[in-house]
Length: 455
Image (cartoon, rainbow, N blue to C red; front, side, top):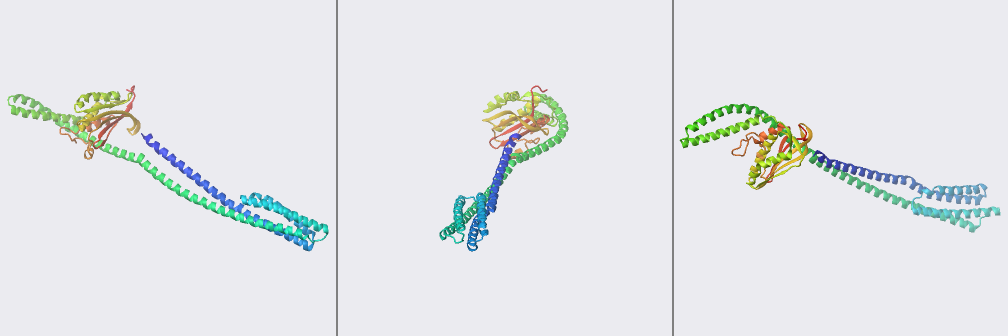
């Protein structure tokens, strides 16, 4: 039973752990994406802006170099133009991978094509000037060079605008990622709180509440055993002191009955006195059995056979009151007990069940295997149940159910359940019950399980 109770707790704990792992993995993935976006913004996007600015600055520098060459006709300016133009081409080739969007790559390809056209026109212009030995450029060709540089500058501005659009998209994506992360954190916190509360409720219902009930039952059982033990010592002495005078009274009454046989009125009084003396003897006998029950002589007993014997004793008597008597016990289930003593306990419980029903009901004797705590340790056990469909036990009666001399019957001694509890205690077992108003009561005897070959 304990393993069955722990099974849902273990499954729930695994579910909580899996949920926590899933939430942690999701949050870590989201943070990684955010960090990648930040890194992307801090490197690639900044470099993209530098790309457009560098291209624009390079083209303007080349135009200035051409203009100085036209004014001063110095070979150094010509060489500087060739060097700077080559370096700008190489720089653009190495920065190609930093452009991330399709619009940026398209503009880059247009810039490359336009830049090559610009260099072609500029080189033609320089070649014509060198061939003519003068710096007087062809106006038409210079206009083409200048138009090419204007086109490059315009493409650079478009690339800068594309970079800004990419930055806006990045900011929008970053905001969306942060919003999703915020909602994920809220949902995760709510789920963890819900799971934690559910786990606490499950632990309380599955472990703490049963342990608390078991503790209360154990405390009540201990108090009852202490009370019975103390009362037993007193009962033994009182019973012996009462038994001897009763024996003397019974002997004298027998002689008095013979002497008063011819007087009907006095003879009736003698009969009443005799019945009361017999009742006192029965009380003393039960009292002695309660005070000092004999030690059990255990032997392996098949549970099914024991329950069927008890049923056979009562079947015909109970049938007169329309009470069905059923036995539900698996074969092969054994316990080591004193057969006569346990049979006495079962007879007492069945009689109480029949009196609780009155008529038209069902009494069920049931045997089953279970694991129980007996003698301070968990061990295989046998549960013998006596269940009825009677009226149940009222709360005010439950509080004193096992108290000696407490009874709700006119002719009862109030020692039946007390004696039954002492017998079960002597066997190293336990006796407890469950009851519901108008639905019946079930008494359960828990005894150590045995094997057929045990002696």
